Length: 65
Image 1 (cartoon, one colour):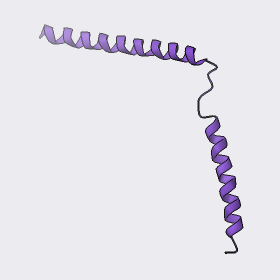
Image 2 (tube, one colour):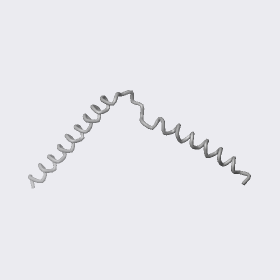
Image 3 (tube, helix red, strand yellow):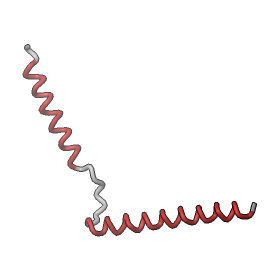
Image 4 (tube, one colour):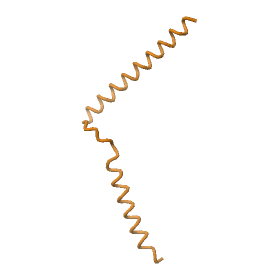
C-alpha cells in the first residue's frame, strides 16, 4: 500500500485533465445558436435538394429503358 497516495494523486491529475479536455469539445465557429440553426437548416435543404435531383435523374434514366 505504499503507492496508494501516488495512485490517488495520479487519478486526480487525470480527472482534471479529462475535464479540461471536455470543456472545449464544441468547435468554436463564432456563431450564436440561432445562426448555427440557420446554417444547419440551409445545409439540410441543400442536401435534400441534391438527393431529390439524384432521384429524379435515376427515374429519368429508368423511364428511357
